[in-house]
Length: 139
Length: 139
DNA sequence: GATAAGGGTTCCATTAGCTGGAAGGTCAAT
DNA sequence: ATTGACCTTCCAGCTAATGGAACCCTTATC
Image (cartoon, rainbow over all chains, first blue to last red; front, side, top):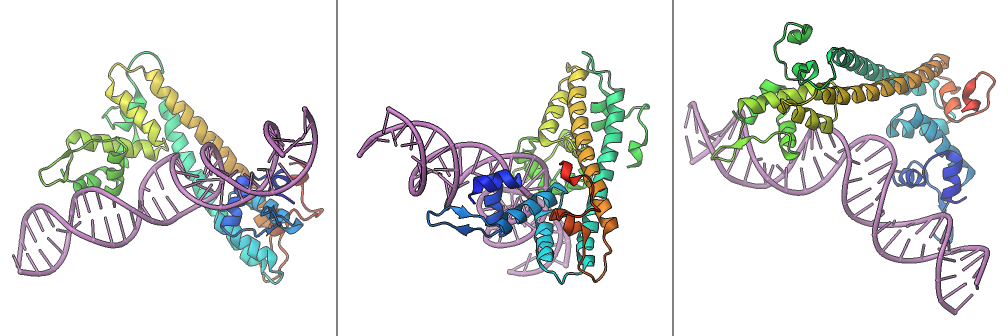
């Protein structure tokens, strides 16, 4: 199968598939004309990669997961560990974003958003002293 | 003031400060020996940048915010718009991560995590048909 | 046979926001 | 004079692709 068909089937852009070959995640065969020739197993692998990436696993995670997938002797504990570490990363990221969101939405709410120059958002970023602000000094 | 002192004061690594100069966010003076010489206003600007970056604003947002900060004629609406767009980005990101988290934690819970090879996480990534799985087919 | 459309190929550059390291200049103290 | 802690510039690399240029292959049509 040529790359275009595989792109359609796997949902990954052809560019991405070539990139995945570059970094050794798939190793399609080559036809006489130099075109990549994908087997069913390659397509399957790419779809696997697409789903793993959609869950936010890093490329290196994906590499490990593929290796574990290929190894029928694997211990599910190994897979679970990768997933749990990723879950932690996600949780930390969500926590970080949630904190940003809280501060930012507070500032946005406080800003009139009109033609006047007075702006609590800028005031906060500039750390201008102002009795209306709260815990910033405790940072 | 030399870059090391500014790094200490602003909380930004010296490398980052040089980078910010490179991309035109600050323009410190130079001493006779070639060292960067930062004014109070530069330090203030860098602290501003540090806080804006901590809230997740992009460098380009920061550039705009600095420009607005310097412009005493600005309308707070302009600042607010930047902040609201950023808030939207954050919300979208949180939503995305929350969805990943849900799927992933479901899979992690389903995985025994022992010495045996059976693994629902890999099964899901590989889209192996299995009655225990739910809505994946509807994707 | 020429040509055009629609595949495919490689290679290089770019994105965001730094960070690390090498090779070297400056300065204060010993 | 030399050590150590600064500072300088420049180049490479990180993540995970993506865009584009220049070129090759295949098939159909005129």
